[in-house]
Image (cartoon, rainbow, N blue to C red; front, side, top):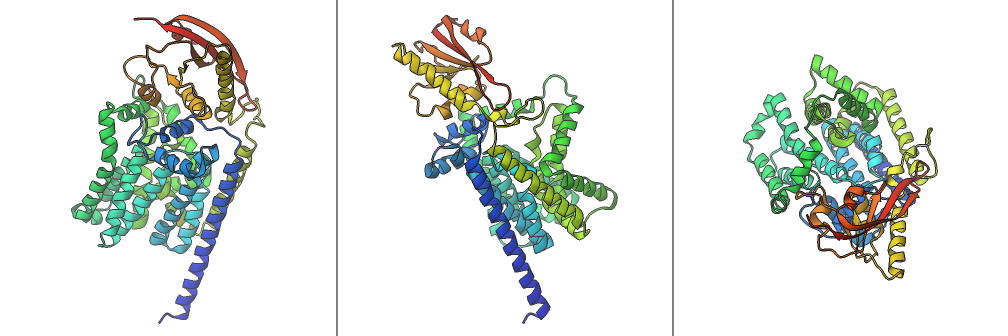
Length: 497
């Protein structure tokens, strides 16, 4: 029979869990409403993922298949509007926050779980990501799920956590190859924690690994059938060519992490690392450091060698959120923790308002922060007009030809009801994107052909045809900033080499 104190503690923990679920539900509701009111067009990566979703497969040129499957499921139920394409994002981020709650509660108690889950849900990077659809969304979920499964497997002898670990590892690999960093983090943890090396002899760990490998094998087979296009793209992204010393890029990436994780939490993480170096850390903290620090270090080195996008180390913040929140609670740093949460909520609300009014305001200097996600509907409408005019004149275009992946993706999405096919120009034997792989311009295509180019006329491409005529050049609005110049050229008769 439990004592009065135990019953009071249990009651208090239940109240904390209710607060957590209500807070998470409110955040999800706010994000869904903001998504419905979002004023941006699909970014070209989002439009590209949507086009992939029309033909579910085990792989695509630049990514594994899960992002396309997610969008396919959402659009089958909801429709093909921007809202429906992006809808999985806030839902999956909410599930990730639930898993982070479970991780923190397991390691540090319910209070840490509640605050860590809400802290992750309001991270600036998550707030930005919840308004778009990207491969990081499922990756973070499966990374968190794999970490939780590993903790359960480490602490017990049951088989189900190992099966969960294998499924999460395989799911993460199918979301984004960055899931492979989980193996590096696990290795760092085992090197740093000799008493846990018994796990290397535990058959459950190896079975989990085999499950993960089995789940990614269809994608490996797809890559083999397509000359390992995705791996080639990944190597191109690393861009280890030319000068390999870019300290400015490393500083840029490192500085961006204050924005992704939040300035207070990232400063807290750096302080924890410094203290760990000088004084050591408790065993649970060491586990989380092992799953937070290695990827940050590796990607910072990558940025120094070449370049790195701010989100490339996003998986680090699953463990880092739990670690920093638990440390602040343990050190009674409530002022800093409240400050971080307040700052994140303000950033979240500002981002919601900004996306709703996207295109209707500019920053000092006339720069529209959403320019890259605006004006694509206008591009599609202008292209429609050129097609309709040619059709009315009795000389319909046989295809729309593009020389840029962004234009291809956006036209495919915003001209999805247009019967004239959109094809991509391919220079040389090796495709540079998924459209050059799957819908390249065929040399035998009869004209007239409508070439759509951003900027001025693509004279080098036009020169490859017997006849070319620039028929229009338009400046299309792309938000409140500078307009986007688009050139339309009629082509006929590809020259023989």
